[in-house]
Length: 169
Ligand code: ADP
Image (cartoon, rainbow, N blue to C red):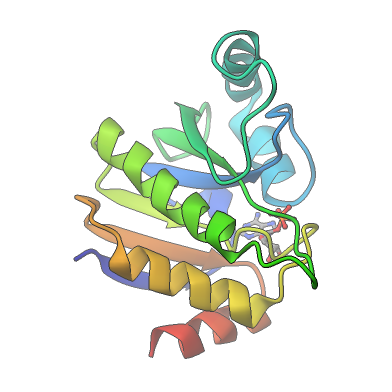
């Protein structure tokens, strides 16, 4: 069972083996976490994403899946890109959100990453309510069978931090 840690801050500044990107399926950049990672990580990340689009993921990375690239100039070694579901009030997409956390940890295990930092996937532009996103994140990583030793949740704002605190304790 990995140690779970909460951090209020910026995911791009985390010194961990792998940071998880709340990407979109194009893998070619976006706003929020994705924009920050590409801005600070530099062009090497986008170059690998383009290669992935040209090979394994010609139709884009499916929602709930995860794939790794270099972390470029970030302090981390790898970026694990995962695509969260867009929130829907009439369609329960919780299993896809859980899959993002599970698949990211599976990729981390393949890489041999021992420390991984997650943002609150889908809770920004994709509109997932923070409390529910935090609950799914914590439940899923707690249930995951992984060799990752430390999992940090990096929350940008106080509300996100408070929601994860509530979900954890
Ligand atoms: P999504 O499209 O999956 O909703 P976003 O990147 O829009 O992803 O937002 C996911 C969460 O990450 C939101 O709660 C947002 O406030 C937060 N966030 C945005 N930028 C950063 C950052 N640099 N570090 C950590 N969290 C961030």
